[in-house]
Image (cartoon, rainbow, N blue to C red; front, side):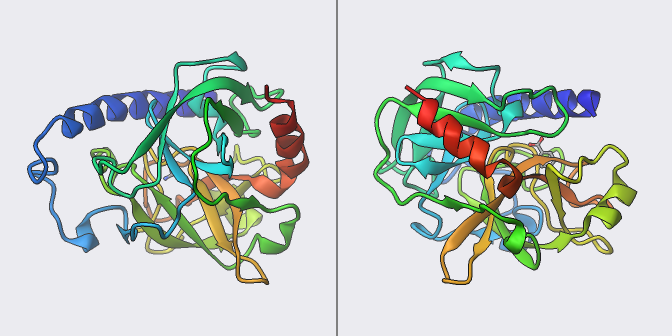
Length: 264
Ligand code: 4AZ
């Protein structure tokens, strides 16, 4: 588990470098060599519309995140190095296209990595921003009522296992996978702290390298978006029998709330 996560962290760092290279290409040539058809452009995803998921942010280390508050990003613990003052992360929001001149980029001031995080479970962290990003925030699940059905995932991660980071945000829908089934796929699963989603039989739709830290979300009873997961890990991407594993947000809702209150 520890080894697998470290492997992923390396993959993300490499992918972030790849994205930086992509960003230097002229517009239009940026994704040259990458097929453009939605069906082949993420692991089973399609392009998100501008403004569709306004709380989505891209983090400079190559992870995703969601605005918990206008100046606080919720992401994965494995995307950050630890807790304390930190001005080394940039969060980019307000756009689906990272090269859109309307993108708003804000630096971090402080990071809170989940207390007790040791590479297994507890995969959440908060990043305080120097200034607010003026976009709607994403509410987090405070109970397990939403841990079922279909979920939406979104991000700028790879469109295929081992693939490049994406300039434009992609989205996909993945169904809940129950703990017993997921434990069958991954003996190391921590059922109380992790939640699985994906197409067990056929695979083909999943989060992937660089989507880590981004939210998994659904509509609640009132029709409002609710974050139920944080992209955490999995064996490869979109493999049949190997669902994506997500931090179970409801388990940590009280800790996340308290943590956000402690940020400077
Ligand atoms: C990653 O490394 C990663 N297929 C994210 C999601 C999954 C695997 C790896 C799940 O960011």
